[in-house]
Image (cartoon, rainbow, N blue to C red; front, side, top):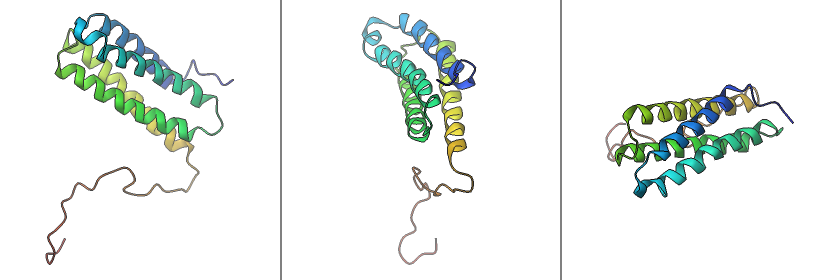
Length: 139
């Protein structure tokens, strides 16, 4: 089994799981057992995905899932902020910063697994934010 304890992404994910556990402990009862449980499950899931990806030779599918889960975690944290579930902004900020770092590191790890010289399609997974020109007008 590959060593994972020294991976920066593993350390950040473990720290996030601890921060989430501490934050959810202070959530109001209404949010603790719904959103709080989701955040706990997601944070532990990130750690598990890192462990599984690190021990596989074909890491790309798990790293894609890790990236997606990190993005879902960021959404859950934003919902928690908006409904004022966190006891302080500082608590939310710490968790959000860690989630962003994990998402960034997972993306870098995923890119490092692609074969050299392979190019990702330009708009894969991204929306075109430029509005379409009406017919007859130049773009």
